Length: 304
Image 1: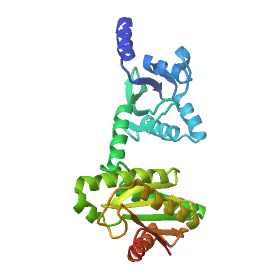
Image 2: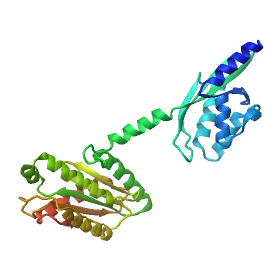
Image 3: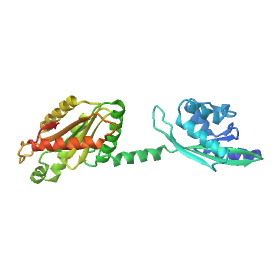
């Protein structure tokens, strides 16, 4: 029996998952080597000190401090103990100052010598989560210009609109269209047109530095800039500076009726979000302003 116990303990100590066994009261009966090693490297209880610690009480203590993991873990473990759930599992972040980490927690019951026990394992799923995160990020980035795409713009504007609504702060939206882009493609070819889009996209990154800002490729030769918590006067100054910076790029568009280099038209709108409004209204206003800029001769900023 001793040899059998030692054999099983060695097996459990060889796996990379962090494993702990608790009884019905929540007291820890066993931890494997991975559990102890993780505890030592993360300033938790170490070595033999784990035995007798009440895992449920630790979850409750974390929950009382506002830790959502403690809430979910405590509830899930108790559901398995009370047999309202056969098993329990969920994914949670456990980031350190040096790296991002995610784990999958599983709770599984077993019965031995007339008593109930519960295996709680924590599997490191960081590699998968990072891959998923990267895939989500790629899906939100325009493949040509490497700036956020229309999907990212829509999601960001929705959240920034809600934030400015709560804070009663203004939000500005600039819609930017490259003037006579078709003429540029017809004159120099689509490769030169793509290069123009890439350079404009790269320039726009300079105008979206704060958490409440975003630059995005809206579609085709149209771009957008959102400036959260920003008034019209400041946004107008930024937009005019953008016109100058694009001119300084010196990208030729010799057949353009405006200038012999690439220019843009900008439609600018400011709103303070209200309860009865949504972000579609500021998009409509900036679109209307962009139309006025084009109608007024292009290579300008127009705002109502």
